[in-house]
Amino acid sequence: MISRLLRLIPPGTIAVGAGLGLLGLASYVHLAVAGHSLSGADYNRLSVLWSIVFTLGIGVFMPIEQEVARVVAARHSQGLPPGPVLTRGVTVAAAMLAVLVLAVTVGRQLLADHLFHGDGTMVTVLVGALAAMAVAYTTRGVLSGLQLFPWYGTQLGIDGGLRIVMVALLGLAGVTSPIWYGVVLVVAPLASVLLTLPPVLRAIGGGAPVAWATLLRGLGLLTASSLLSQVVVNVGVINLQLLAPSDTAAAGALLSALVLVRIPLFVFGSMQASLLPGLATTATTGDQAGFYGLLRRAVGIVTALGLTGAVGAVLLGPWLVGVLFDAPGVLGHGDFAWLAAATLAYLWAMVLGQALLALDRHRAQALAWTVGVAALIIVTLLPAPVILRVELAYTIGSVIVAATMAVLLRGGTRRPPNPPLTDAVTPAVSGGIR
Image 1 (cartoon, rainbow, N blue to C red):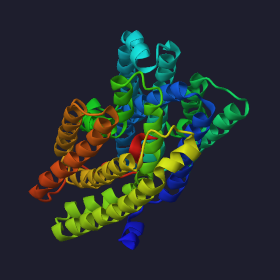
Image 2 (cartoon, rainbow, N blue to C red; image 1 turned 180 degrees about the vertical axis):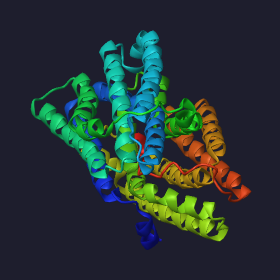
Image 3 (cartoon, one colour; image 1 turned 180 degrees about the horizontal axis):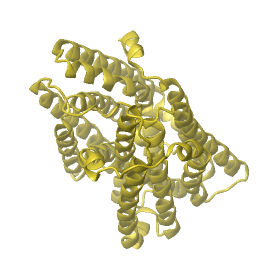
Image 4 (tube, rainbow, N blue to C red; image 1 turned 45 degrees about the vertical axis):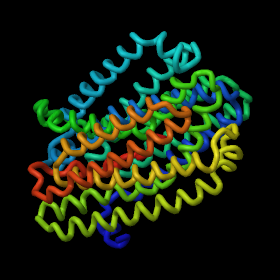
């Protein structure tokens, strides 16, 4: 399986993977330094900000990156410049950002009171971080579509490197305000875009405008699936803050635990970019045996990853979150067991979702995530201890998504009418802790 996946890896995956690895490391360093520098209440506020930023940022703007990359790659193969695509992509990203900013602005006081203990400045930082993600994902789509993978990986690496340097300086300076640790999520991605903008500007070119339908055809369903998947994996921290606002330690402790148990999701992220082309190729040629054989082996790999991570998380998790993040001891081995089980089910859902995309069944994927989020909401509202409810909601929601996808996949393979979305390398960052 590994050798087959290595043969499927598109050129540049290693460069992108290196940048992605540094960005992942930055997430751990960021939260670790903040955990040791901030009070429990302030770390709670940063945790909620973190969860909202990556739920909305990845959920809304990564599909734009994927669609921009797909269209740019198609034009690039015909010798056409990416300028018209970038213009449309920037317009779409700006429109989506405007909607988010309007919603946040209208609900500013409500968000501040219920999520940030009345701190309106954290809402301002939220807006800035969403704007930074909109810019970053749009430009990454162009870099990916043009197969400028070293530059793509460089942008990821600069983003991660700057986060590490900035939070290290904040920690050394004794900064104890969560606002500055949140500002890192604004400055680092914007700086990474500026430093990797030259190749985009050199390649822009002109040409006739791209039809809106070319870019928007699959964007709605992609956005729905992306956003709902991020809700499943990230909303627990937000729900915990809403359900237990007086518990100043719970949300921060949960985010620290989630960062640990979702390490297998980072490993899957390096495999994801090569898995979808392999599945799409077998589906396009009608090779059902090859399709389901590759799918079964992929499920086997992520199952091994998930179980390995689960053993480490359950045995060492309560100790590690205290050592690494200075998290309070509010979560025990049982809590880590539920979170690890949820992560394993989420890994299954990610693999099965790739299979549905390879079959061009975007609606089926969106339906599965919708059913899973509905189950998550129902479980969250049940009468039970708050932390247990949040953990069970993540677990049951992920299991139901995976089960629904498995049922929907029984429809068999068929030839996709459009080129797969991964004609260019557009690695999704799983787990929402980017």
